[in-house]
Amino acid sequence: MYSAEFSERGKGILRQEYLSHQKVYSFIQAQRVLEQAVFLYNYKRPHLSCNMLAPE
Image 1 (cartoon, one colour):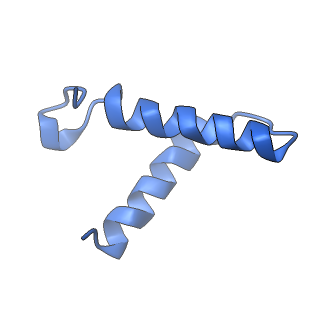
Image 2 (spheres, helix red, strand yellow):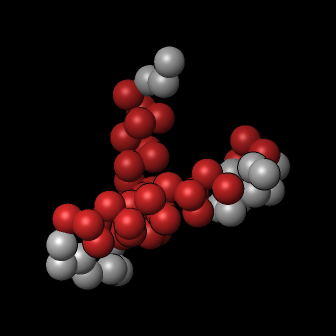
């Protein structure tokens, strides 16, 4: 189970790095943008825990 600190950090990273620069005009668009951001975070973004490699 994840702690609150990791959850808050993840939300902050998603918001700052992927979502803050995009305008969203509908709920459907928001879902798609968020899904893409989560995918990029999970599979493409380098992570400290992986020695700054993408966690593929």
